[in-house]
Length: 130
Image (cartoon, rainbow, N blue to C red; front, side, top):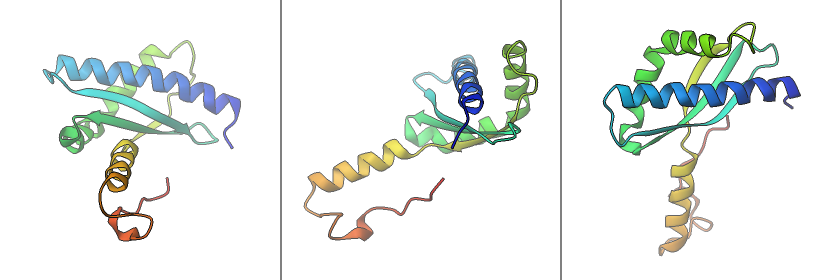
């Protein structure tokens, strides 16, 4: 169960990281790429932030996620500048790809199609619990 403080810090980080990533994408010349931060969860000691990003179009997702991870230090620095009046310490940032929209899309496609995923469970990929 997340505390109010974790939720508040998560909300602050979510908003600022989304702005940082989207600005970096447009300044980097990536036209038509949409990066959104879908969820931020903070550990109880406030030292690690798990950031889930959704990237559109999906075919660009893995390459962009690698780019985001390799620029983690710059992103953390930018976040520190933006939140210096709100956070004493910026948590360590861990980025993950949020594939929930793709998963939902696959379920909808399966339900519309001939095959029934409820009867044939191997039609849908197994999801890891996060």
